[in-house]
Length: 220
Image (cartoon, rainbow, N blue to C red):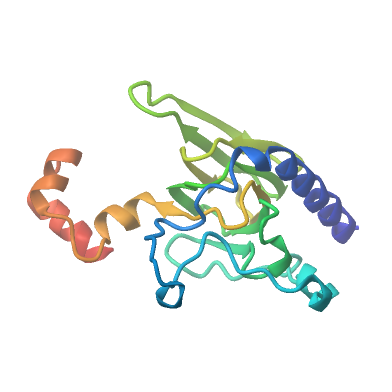
């Protein structure tokens, strides 16, 4: 029965993502793509090179594993299992992808953004407090606690999060309007950049003592 529910959920999310896919792809599928005159020296392309259709097989359109519960034994207490173009080659140019989100009790998928995709999630187990923040200057928070069967949408590029507020594990499935949505985890990117951002920038931006910023950079 759970397998049937999951199948229906994934199918619905895939359909919903397809309907909004044109609002995202074919925007850039990586952070930048520096043009080169000599194609032999090129490294990145906007998406993937395409296989000859005559050589395609059913395997190119298939992924197995979303029913598998993932370990959440990490500091955040959450794990994201991506199903994008890297796992299903046939997603190339289709503008959709999926993800499974596993949460331990009090597990957090931290504040982040997807620069290339709107995301829709549906809760299968547990209870998730979710939300997103609009762009400046409003910085308005839209947040709600979701239960099994509930759906929530996170607009493209906006900071969002999910926190398991149940005393049990939580599971959600996400649909994204890009074959490769990208992810910017706010804390990791800001305090864990390589090389480090100058202390003066972060102390002024976050109104923190230099020692606190130094500690956070060392932590991340």
